[in-house]
Every structure is written in structure tokens, then in C-alpha cells.
Length: 385
Length: 163
Image (cartoon, rainbow over all chains, first blue to last red; front, side):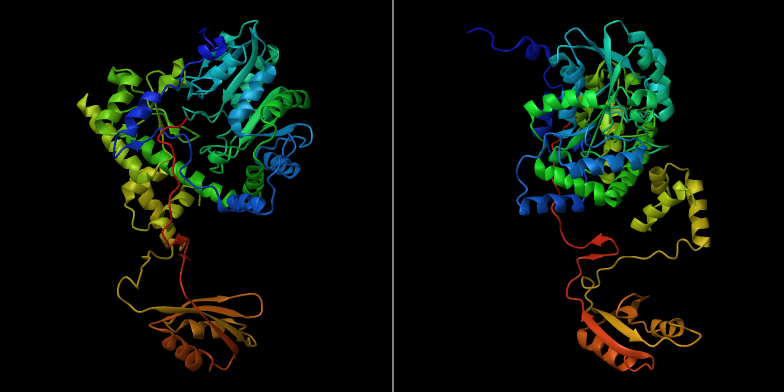
């Protein structure tokens, strides 16, 4: 039999944490800092809206773009929280999670041979997403000494005549790095000069702890060439509902919508109603969660630095990204031995790209007690080295 | 009051006995600064008191509670204040609020049993000159109090790893 698997499917790597998954499954008393989702339940007001939609028989497809009422609410939300304006009728579409939004956005702009600049380290789907679309991922390092932001200098170094798009994610998974409006402004000239399109995954923006949260689209020069991705998974603890959205100038939005209508048709209807509920009444629950995460961050990062694991104070998301370079062992070995010997699961930074090497991604979206115990155990592990 | 003070209040409202070291870690402050900020918040009256949330039933006490709504004739020159001060003196009255709508006051009254509460209302409250009408609504079960859920809840499950 010949090899039925496509070259593109061959070209993408398998999951970088399968092995850890297997180890953890066999183990008791594990504290997992490997979970990339909130430990809160969806705000009840959103659940009620989802339940009501089912009770009322709203179980059919919606328009490809998503419910008009939801797009109106998203428009009001973006205006209120970021002071950016999008036309709900022509510049917006609702997607099945930010993962789908990323996929259709990448495919909408990528031709074979195009180089797609990706902030490194990055969420694990970016590279494979670009590869599947026939493009070439080009990593733009976002370094610890720059607080894991993207600087004009590093961006400039990676640009070639083949550069087509810039794919960024701030607040960042896995580093917690945040771009302010000024930081976006600083890279805008280069983006415009080299005529790049920006895909900005802003799924963690509500989880910004120090300073104002910012959107790439709030810089006018970027707004006209940016595909903005945001959603409900992180801000409203709605990961399982699979609901997010794209906002972009009409031409870009229409291209993404064409792909979406063939591969997804529409986002889950009950989730769209739940999302309306979240935007209309979920602010209090969201603020409570964000405050709690801010406190856990403070406590956890202080703990890591105390036991001798240097860690910058991440300004957003719910990840700490300590460096383990001084230990002399690789991040993969560190993570493997840590889970085996001390039953604390973390994700090696290298899983998120070359710039992640020598770091660990520790999600602090777990209880304060678990965080305290995790710090103690990591401390004991460090002493045993 | 700044963002750090606000954070301290949130922490103390949830757990008034948390030690300074732990508060300092959560708020990302020095221990000395936490202590001085809390003292300032106490002295300015922003923090009124520290108290425990107690399950008296578990402590073996018989307890009953009722919401008591009152219609009141306000007094010239004093409005509702003087009558409110008189009602508030009774230890059985756990809370007392001036409310909008049909009734004027809303009280939370506690006692060892229902009889004790109804006797208190009919003999001590209803007989006051300014009271025109009372309505006693018995508490049958408390599910949530002061922001705390009092019943068992099942936690949602998450995968041990996700990106």
C-alpha cells in the first residue's frame, strides 16, 4: 500500500506533550500546571442564556457570520473596552473558537511560498497552521530581556521579500508577555513599510494585570491591515463552548468568511446565545476571576523567584515562564524529572518554539493551595539537582 | 485608596485572618507596607471589623431566622432615623435596612425557634407607636450568605494538559 498521508500532514509535528500526558495519567497526587484554561466555571448568566436558547428550540444553523445580535454586542464590547470600531454587518464573523479563527485567517492570506512571521515562543498551532496552508513559518524571537514583547529590531531582522504576514499573540501564551499600545505603534512602521498583513490573536487581553489592555487594532495604521481574533474562552471561562470571533476590514473578513462557510458553516448556535449572555451580564464574574488570577500570579512568581527559579513578572494571561538555564539541564528533561520525582506537571518551553528553550510554562490557573504546594515541590526538586 | 488598597480589601473580605506574609505575596507588596496600609484602612473606618462566618447549627445551637418587613410612620424632624435607632437596639435584630417599595424597613431577626421570633415581633416590634404593619417571613433554608455558597457543588473537570 502506498503512503496515503499527505506531505503536509507529514510535515506537521505530533503533539509535544503526549509523553507527559501518559505519565500524568498513571500518577496520583499530581499538581498540573499544564492546563491552558481557566479553573472557573462559565459565568452563570452565560450558561442561562445558552440553556434558554436550547429550551426555546434555537438549535438550527445561524447565518455564516453568526447571530446579528451577537455581532452587535461584540461591536459594543470592542468599542467600550478597546475603543476600536468594527461594522458588525461587514467586518465581523463568529467562529468555532479562536482555533478555527486562526486557521481561516491564516488560510485567507497565505499562498505557497509566503513567509509568515510568528512571534516566538507562540501557541502550538501557529507553525503547523501556516505549514498546512502551504506557507513557511519564520520565527521572530520575543526575548526575556524585552519582557517577551516583540521589538522593531528583532522583527526587522527576519523580514525578507517573501514576508507576507505577521502572526502575533499578546498577552502571550506561553510567556505572559504583553504589548502596550505604544509597543504596537513601535512595530507599525515596519509592518506598513513592508506591506504585511497582521493576524493578532488577542484571546487573553482581558487578562491584563498591569497597565491598560491594548489591541493591535487600536493603532490606526494597523487597523486597516489587521485580522483581529478574540473570543470568550479565556475572558469568560468558556473553553468548552468553542466560541470566538474575527474582526477585519471587509475584504479580509470576506475571504475568511468564504473559508469558514465551507469548513464550519456556523459556530454552535447555543454557544452564540451564551456568548450574548456573557457580553451583556458577565462583567462581574470576569472581573472577579481576573482579580484572583492577578493575586495568584503575584504569589506564584514571588514563590518561584524565592526558590531560585528566575521568573519575570508576566503582565498578562495566566502563565509564568521561569528560566531554568542556570540548572544546566534541558527544559524537557527538567519537566520530565519534575513530574516523575515531585509530581508537578509543567510544559517545557521548547514546545512553544525555539525561543522557549530553557524555560517552563507554568499555568497558574489552579487553586492557591496547589500553587503553594507546587512551589514547595519545585524547590525540593531544585535542591535535589 | 489605590489599586493595591482595593486588592487588600478584596483579600481581607474573603479571609480576614490571613497572615501578612501571605497577603504580601498575593498583593505583590512588602510585609511592612501591607501592615501600614491595613492600619490606615482600619483607622479611616474603611475596614469596620473582622469577624467569623459561623455555622451555629453545627455548633449545636437551635437557630431560626425571619425577614420582617415593617410599615412605619416617619416622625416630623427625624424621618425614619429615630425609630430605626430604637429597633436597632434589640439584639435579635441582626440587620436593619430602610428599603424602597411597599414596606419601609427590612429586618433580619434571629432567635432559637420560630415561636421566639414571632413573640418578639408581636410583643416588641408591632407594639411600637410608629409601626403600622408587620410581615414576618420565615427563613426555611439558607443557600448563600454574604457571597458564600453554603451548599456542596460539583467541580467541573479539566484535562491535565492543554495548550
